[in-house]
Structure formats: structure tokens, C-alpha cells
Image (cartoon, rainbow, N blue to C red; front, side, top):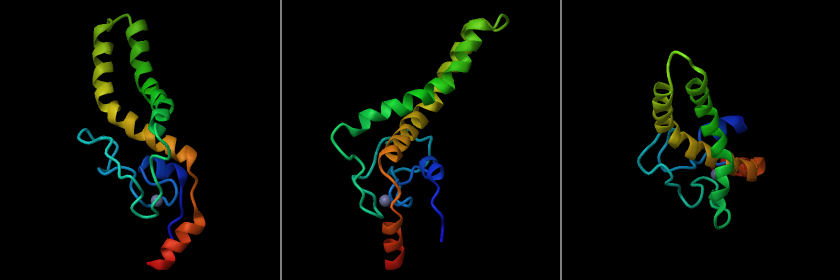
Amino acid sequence: MKKYHRYYSILKLKCPRCGQGDLFERKGLIVYRNKLGMPECCPVCNQKYEIEPGFWIGALWTSYPIVVLIEVPFLMMALFSETLGPWIPLSLMFVAFYFAYPIMLRLGRSIWIHNWIRYDEELVAKIRGKS
Ligand SMILES: [Zn+2]
């Protein structure tokens, strides 16, 4: 029997309640096409993902720090590097943002929903018992 790990579930973009169903229709952190396409409910445990209207707006609180973490080193480089000048670090900042953008959106949503819905061990035991 596979043990549930919360952080693994967040990083693998899994349902917070059962840890098995996928949060997004397309797998992976770096996805550009249909990056926010999500099923309405978990295909395994039937947990509704958008708990209330506007639920995902709250994910801004979790996605913003991800971008800050990624971009601040480039900003510091632009501000304090005496040899590089400002344009190389700022260009790198845009490149980093291009790759970080889908990670920010998807991981931000995953962290947000894991913050509100807890793993349900009994339910998972029931699901495993059925199959
Ligand atoms: Zn589920």
C-alpha cells in the first residue's frame, strides 16, 4: 500500500483528498497549452476542485511567492552586478518568467487546494477496498 505524502501530492499535482486523481487534465508542471484545464471533480474520489465560486483567485496568494523566489535573484543581479549591467539580468528574468509562468499557476493552485482540503484516509481505504 502506497503511503500518502502531502508534499509529493502537491508537487505531482494530485487531488488533496485521495492523493490519486490528477488536479489538471494535462500532466506535468511545465505545460503551456491548456495549462489551467482542470476536471470539475476528482476522477477517483469525486472531490469537487473549485470548492466555491472564485476559489482559485485565492491561489494568487500561493503563486505570487513562487515567482518572487524565482525572479529576485535576477533582480539582485541587475541591481548590484557591476560587470553584467542591467540588461542581461533583466533579459534572463524574462526567460525565467517564461518557464516559471506555468509552474507558478499550476503549483500555486495545487498548494492552495492542499491548504483547504485534507487527505481522507478512510475514504482512500474504501476506494482501495472496492478495486
Ligand atoms: Zn481525489
